[in-house]
Image 1: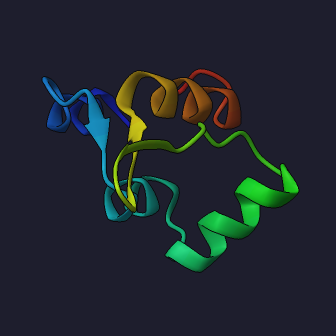
Image 2: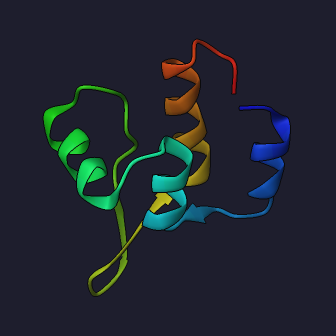
Image 3: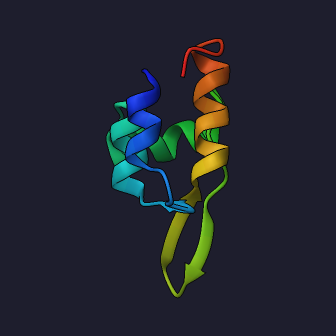
Length: 72
């Protein structure tokens, strides 16, 4: 991933589940499994409303940097 990927989300405080799935290249089901098993760093989901969950953009990119060893 290069800086243009990060630039796409400039100004977004939260990312939706489909956006995070796209960044990780996971299906929503796989994302949820990885959250539970802790196999890779995934940021915590934040409930922003009744049954509405998001991920903080900064935490998401920090986790992706850990996986890619700083290449995000």
